[in-house]
Length: 365
Image (tube, rainbow, N blue to C red; front, side, top):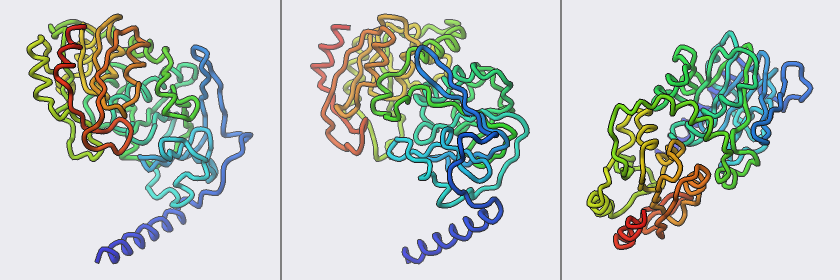
């Protein structure tokens, strides 16, 4: 029965792909760099080189996961297109459009569209929203023409709507690629990645350029009004994270950790319960922060110098939080543990915190 269902699903997809190929044509090869409808502008920010790709009368198709193809005359444009394979942007000839075409109804858009697509987990992740997507607005400042619409990975989460409002990007100027994954625009504008400069994400994410932090501080810290009195010492509570994710990352004895921290005067805070600007204020006014390795630590960007940070982490988690903290002149410490269960990929694995060690570390911060 399962094989029969798979056969029917495969047959259905094949028929759909064939129909859309008849409508929009087959994708054939990579476009020449000297095409008159494709222009690249090179810019520099703090000695880092970036590109702005400008494509006239072009299409963009994305599977909303790993691939996004910019298309002119049914040929893919290599620079602004991406096809992520194991997080690396691979050869454009591996883009999914060569296998299945562009199987979605095309939405025609008059005007200039800025694509902020990044693919993968970045579509929903707070860290990637702040550090991969929003900084592109700084890069695009070098583009001296009007942007009519902003193509985004998706628009579902509270922090997305709130940051867009603060950035003065009206919702009627946004397009969700989840709803419209195939568009045609008078002009498509796409930037290179803000910090994945060598196409080696495992290295590049450890060396995020300082201009990104400065840009985010300039955009959001001015909105801090200090209307609430937040605790200066707090623990980032991730207990509401979806535990069904097989790549889980939890503290096995978290109740004991929370009790220990509470006795030391730490508030227990779930960041998801706070509006974005209150998260900014929480970190901006903090003196000491403890938490399990996770996206919420992106808010360290908004801390004042010399804020104390204690990261609880699996030994598989890497040094991305450490580097972010040190680049922003924070005082960083860590408790690193061997995962006791689940270690499918980097940053994943459940850990047990040594409470005696935790108490010792708390005395030093």
